[in-house]
View 1 (cartoon, helix red, strand yellow):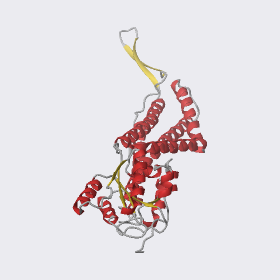
View 2 (cartoon, one colour):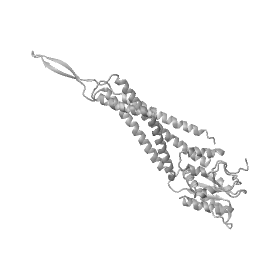
View 3 (cartoon, one colour):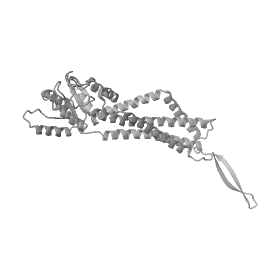
Length: 371
């Protein structure tokens, strides 16, 4: 399956954010400038008795009451539009984090360990480490007396109930592990190989793109790299802590950059100008060329709120794209081959457990005797 649909998904995320922001700006502009023109002054009519029984109509123009000028009305509406944009950013962010939490897997990740018969000790060691990390582990103990069909049924049952698979292949000889690997591939489960020596060969039924973890490093770190990876690949709630803090870090960094740059200073200056001009317009204080300046200030504030809305919506869209990448790579729905390590580096860039996960992966992978 080709990987060129990932860029298309990313373009779709950008298009979605751009269309949403343009819609926000268009609706805000219509809302602000659809305000009908209002008289600058109050006009009163009353009748004057001329003394001969007739009455004349007299028109008197008085200064407008504070807060009644049409410019002030537009300023109020622009303020509402900016506040609405900020509120929309907050609401969308909260809903995104809430739904992201609710849609994650909440029960413990179930891992099936597949191993060559002579590697039962390593499999049991890995079973104990993963259980200590809160994962549920299924393993079929080697039984030389077990009947053929009984073994197959046990393997089939445990593979069907598993969320992920750990494979410890023999360093030289193929074995029943090949069948278990192919079963995991057909079921579309996240799969990792454990490498305990350089001469280990890749099972004939395993894709070269499945990540290969160093057995010694996983043991040294008490199974954490594998636990973190499976929580990441299976979209588990335990992984949400890493995702949540990475999003907050990205937001804080973006905020610091915006505030420190010209755009942030311009937005802050426009806000002060807007507040001062609003007070002046409220009391009908005439300011030369104030109208053009106010329109510029309103435009800058609207663009600033639209910019934040764009960043939030784009972040949400790219988050879905990254989840799709994570799903495809961990299951090799998209064949990444030797590029798996680089792809995981990209996906885990903001993940605070990335050092442990990537540090335990062997970029060279397993020896492929078939080229």
